Image (cartoon, rainbow, N blue to C red; front, side, top):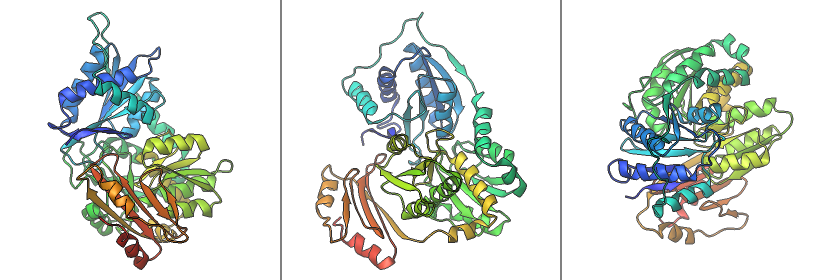
Length: 447
């Protein structure tokens, strides 16, 4: 299969569509796209996949030999690389990660100088350079860039999180937390942050060795062992991260793993309960109505964007949203930075638990329940999505949104069908107040 290049960066299978030669061309096309400021510095960080260090060495060499300076922050979560780009006032940044994709994959995420990801225009520009082999020329011996390793950003990052939440209230509770980092990049920062929030921390997958203990998607199905440990132990909350730690899934003291959207819903509740001015919230078209319900409960206004962090962030800036994110557990809190971040999410959830003074299982019960079904269909041909799209017919009372695939919706149910930005699949998500209607929704699709 070929390299996937889109709003989530570049991803491919190592040795096939993601090779040293391809990465070399990608990075040189990226550098030609970068807006050069007085600080010609590129920050790079990587996840824990067993090929990420190899690609990091290639990338840092290419950047330096093209005349840019490199700050290597080593093994680091995606939100931390975004933060570091802002912290060092860099020209740009690269994350070496394929996020939730299987271990045989790897990829690159491209970051602008403001710490947000490349938008569609910049990706199109990069793609055009790549296609036409119009990449940045090599520097000579005198104009090559410097290289340094630097981790001074860590304490600043954690300090900023602690200033956003009510640290005193959280510390009083001395929460017992189980962290499932699944061998990913989130363990080191996660443990340090939780301890500084006054928590008693233990967990699994805390060694950042790339030995993933379960499949990379932090779904209820993949978290069965973790939820059993929490249910049998004496914990107040469980946190599960994906391997580049931009997403967070919650687990109650009873071992309950709710839908991923619960993370955003409860973070929205917390922020809106404190926010007195702008009460706008942005999420994507595939996000559960449980987020909408929390926004309306606190007299906020909800806006929907296309799926993908870059689209959510763009709309958040446009609407001056106080919080936003995606239903996959990715929370974006502008007070921290404009990026999905599992660490500020942990702090916001702990703050909410301290404020409501209830077990997490009780907080879950206060959120309205919907039935949700998710399906994936392998993309076998180019016109497959268009063929499925033609089979969908509206019935009276339904509305249509075609900004990202096709979504039909009413106030009580919705169905969203779209090609994935990160995998060669078509994603289908349906949600309804009742099981019967959910099944009827799916029957309307001709696979």
